[in-house]
Length: 411
Ligand SMILES: [Mg+2]
Image (tube, protein in one colour):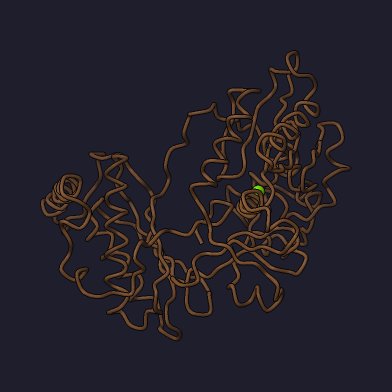
C-alpha cells in the first residue's frame, strides 16, 4: 500500500517567531542576527520583506544593511524557538505518532493510517496548516507525497502558508523540470559534478545511467538516482525515537580575530572541553576529529583526521584539531571563527586496534581523567578546574554559544 507522508516546514522560522512576538516588526524588513557586539554578526534568518531586498542567510550584517538600509536587526531568542518548535510538534502529534523532526523548524509526518480519522492526506495537511496558524500565529508550508524526499521537495515549492501535493501517478510532470539541486542531498559540490555530466534537472538525474552516477558520486550517486525516480523507502521515525548521534562539535566566533597559532590554541582547547564532556555524557568516543575554520573574509575550510585510539579527552581532541590547523592553515588572513567536531563515534569501551607505538595505558588514563574532571565540575562548578592556559585573557566571547543556522547546519 502506498504511504502518505507530509513534510511540514515553518516559514522563515526564527524571523517569524520574532515578528509574531513583537508586532512592531510586522511588515518591515527584519533580520535575526548573532550579537554584533560579540561579532556573531551574521544573518541567521530574515523575513519576506528583507528577502525582497536580497538579504541572504549567512551574510554579514553590514552586507545585509548595505542592500537594505531600513533593515531591523534583532538578536535571536533561542528559548522561544525551542518553545514554538515543541508546540508545533505537539500539534503534529495529534494526527500521528510518527513525527520525525529535521532541524528545529521541519518535521516529517507519516499519516498513512489516519485517512479514516481525518480524511485524505491533502485535507489533513490543510487542517494542520490552519491549526498551526490559528494556535501559534506562525505559517507553515506542507509537502504531501508518497515518500519523504518528495514530501520535503513539495514543502519548498510553494511558500508561505501553502500545501503542495506530489502524487505517485503524476510526479514526473510536476518535478522533472526542476533543478537537480532542489533534491535533498544535492549540495553545491554534487551539483557541480552533475552539471559536468550535463545533468541539470531532476528529470535528467532520473534518466541518467546509474553506473555513471555511481562512478562519479559513489553510493550517494545511486541514492540520488533512486530518489529522482521516486524510490525512497526510508521510514518516518516515531516520536521520541531519536536518531543515533553521528557527531559532536562546538564552535565559536572570537571577540577579536585570531592572528597567530598562539591565539588559536586556547580557543581550540576551550571548545574541546565541552566536546569531551558531551561525548562522555552520551557514552561515546570520537574516532575522528574535524576542524572548521572561517577567515575574516568569511570563507570556510574544513579538515578531518581519524584518531588511532578513540577518545573523549579534551587534550587529545584539541591536539588533533590544532595539528590539522597548524599543518593546513596558511595565515593569509586572520581567523574569525573555529568549530571543532568529532565523527566516527564508537560506544565507550568498544574494541579498537591500536598501532604498535600507541600508548594505550596513557590513553586510558586520559579517559579516567576526563571523567574525574566532569565529576569535579559537576560538584564545584564549571570553572573549578581549568587548564592553566585558559586562565589567561583570551579572545573568547563570555558565553561562547554555537551559532546554528535555521536549517540545523552549524555555520
Ligand atoms: Mg523553514
